[in-house]
Length: 319
View 1: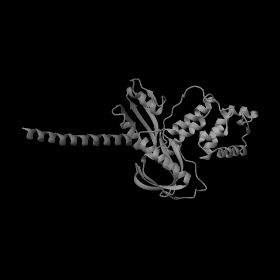
View 2: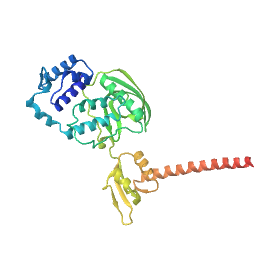
View 3: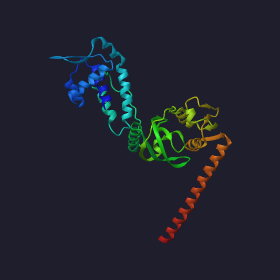
View 4: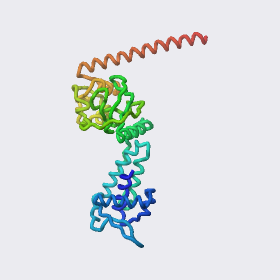
């Protein structure tokens, strides 16, 4: 893409004293005529580029603008590359890797030290996630509707949306768009999407509300939970809610109080703590936990009885 090449050329000019059209043409695998047009485009954009003919000549940014290099320090460049590297971790096309090479071109002296920040945005679903991200990016750029199957706690459904944003939040990827089924803008979690296909073209809406991605808006508080945790779960509470989320009691147990958005999420989290927690409030959650654990016990008792009878039958047959 031309814009990528222009960014790459500008990066090289900012980091090197001088380069030549043949060097740039070879680096970006285009003709010298294309590079000359790119240089003209940069000049029209207000970048003070000068060219010198003959031996020792080439392309450079005017001396009076050397101070502009300070706009991007070595630390700045490291942060930019860290961001691109994180996107490359979920890219299935190698696009961001190529963009990093363009930005790094001729800047080995400018970028000092080793990489100190490594961000991996992939997940257990990396093989399928990168394909979804690439497909959604195409849909957004081309202005194509998307059709897909969606699996949520409320049930399975077929959706069609007009996509506008790809969002990484709460350790997961989401697509934000206008849902034709709900007649409103919605967030959809990529891991819950399947059978994604591009549909017809759509005309972008004049008013697109900003995605509501704050914790308070997406997960509004429903109630307050009060529970007592075993001391061995201190690390778990610190990891999930911070060091100020509980109070240590005289007997060593940890009194936990926190606002929660929904019963299902809270109950799933409590069950993951095994027998290391007792819910005091609210009573409705405590009663749900009791019913769930009682049902689990009953099912396993039935399995044991069934397997016990099968084992007895096999033993008789073997005799």
